[in-house]
Length: 367
Image 1 (cartoon, one colour):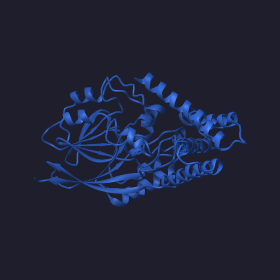
Image 2: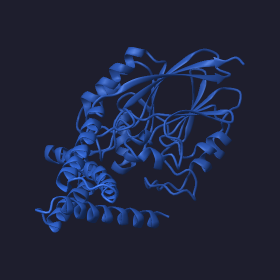
Image 3: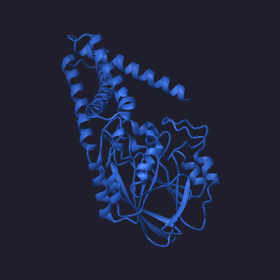
Image 4: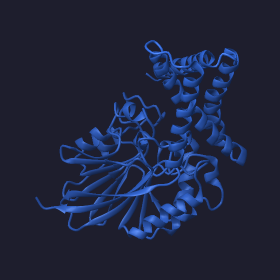
């Protein structure tokens, strides 16, 4: 399945490079097709090299800047491709000026990416009330996920999240992975704002912690008075808090994020001694194993990973695998998925979603 997916993606991006260059050469005849193809290929290939390979492991201002620019350029070409397809279809019915319609496509792609870049600069705090059976008193939780401290965001952004969290005075804070995603996180003091959170903080790893080296990052995070949960249960504030490592849902499931654990959500949950006489809250980076969480009788699952799709048309494709964002009910289990506080290490844009941290007000369900 992994090989098929890679082949399909390589095929799509190869076609995107060829088609975008070809249609631009039709609209702008004074620029050669080969010149446009080199420009398009440089944008797409350069994006993957800087974002997925170089910038994750190295840290300097040039790479950080180029990483951000490459992400914008890639998304610009991505949307331009679809706009050129639409124009191609329109020209079979109506014959607008080639140059001006080409300029319009370039302008629309630029404006869309620019708006998405502005939206991605800040975050909002959402509030959700969730009824939990067996809960003795109201419990407030700040759910933080997918901050992605690295080239796109740093200590200042994390400080703002901590300030917004302390302002609401939650009983506890849970961080469901992908707190970091690039080498700048390892600089002295980068994660120090976490130590300023006034409530107890619990953390589970995400796929990006795995990419960078989970052990050293978990040590850095643990130094900030953060409790790391690793496939274990603790009792606090009248609940069972269950924390899962980042792993596949089962041995058969395809995982685009390349989780390589031999254990799975399915296998771990069959071994954990989850009590039925006390409310249970499970925190996991990915919601991919939610069916096994439901089968285990957990009351509430908190996850992130999806980014709410982050930008169109990703919400559609992501929703084919598992829910995207918000609160869902499955039998006696509720699943809450955050869009995340930041954006992925590849593209600093939000379209159709927003950066968020989630203030959850858990109340007793007396029905």
